[in-house]
Image 1 (tube, one colour):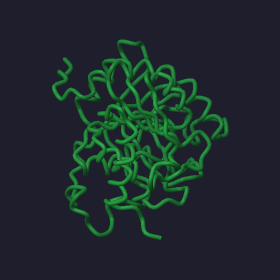
Image 2 (tube, helix red, strand yellow; image 1 turned 60 degrees about the horizontal axis):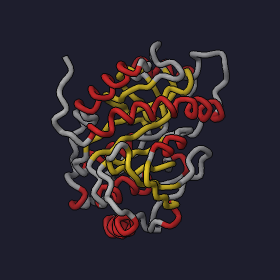
Image 3 (cartoon, one colour; image 1 turned 120 degrees about the vertical axis):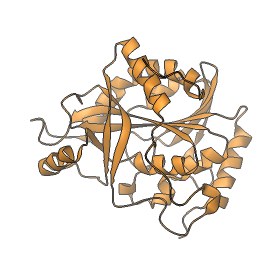
Image 4 (cartoon, helix red, strand yellow; image 1 turned 45 degrees about the vertical axis):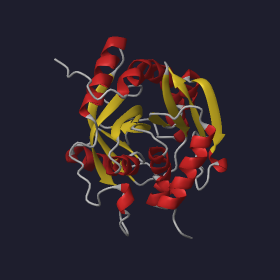
Amino acid sequence: MRTPGYLEAKKAAAYLCAHWPVRPRIAITLGSGLEGVVRGLRQRRSVPYRLIPHFPRPTVEGHGGVLHAGLWRGVPVAMLAGRVHLYEGYAPAEAIFPVRALALAGVEVFVFTCAAGGIAPRAQPGAFMVLSDHLNLQGANPLVGLHEARWGERFVAMSDAYDARLRRLTLRAARALGQRCFEGVYAAVLGPNYETPAEIRALRRLGAEAVGMSTVPEVIAARQLGRRVLALATITNRAAGLSRAPLTHEEVLSVGKAAAWNLKRLLDVILPKAGDKDIPSSG
């Protein structure tokens, strides 16, 4: 079966534009347990993924598969309640399809959220990590294959994948709100099994401060399109070997739901300024 390409993304974008009274400038992908954040949208319109042409459908609990659009403090925003993962059997081009479709629909800034296991001592459950860099250890890249020039350059520079100004804005906002938030390196692994203690020790030596099973393919796709990216991981548990408690998906969802209120408060500060390319530097 042919993986969706440019024409399919254009069709999905046209469908979305026809259903949006105002085109969103910012898109937010909600990670595991964070679907409650959509309640912050005003004048909300919701479309199940199954109705959007060629959109992939999540199969994992905590990823409902509904696209919401509305206003967040006056800013037009789209929220993806649910993402698909490579471990579900989707091809990389399918996993990043929503990013490409939303970019063609006019989105300029992507905010990716996810759940992650904490590796660094400061990566404790309930804290947020602003991604400053990543390690792609998934064994896949969404840009592999025949090059489609309409997506952008084939050889995409990733030295500044995560927008520095958006990161500073987020860290300042978290400090002002009294939230636990730090900047760090995210390791993306394939999953779906959790890592072994030996793998976590290896990741720590590689410089990873948190580990998860998503986000990186979407970041690569957004950067190829020239879009600005902010990524925020909710630390839902300590990684394997760093806690006596066994790792469970139920724990991930529980901590994610508890963090949704703090994420909403953070977005209240970030989103009205996220489209501003002239955010002042800190210090």
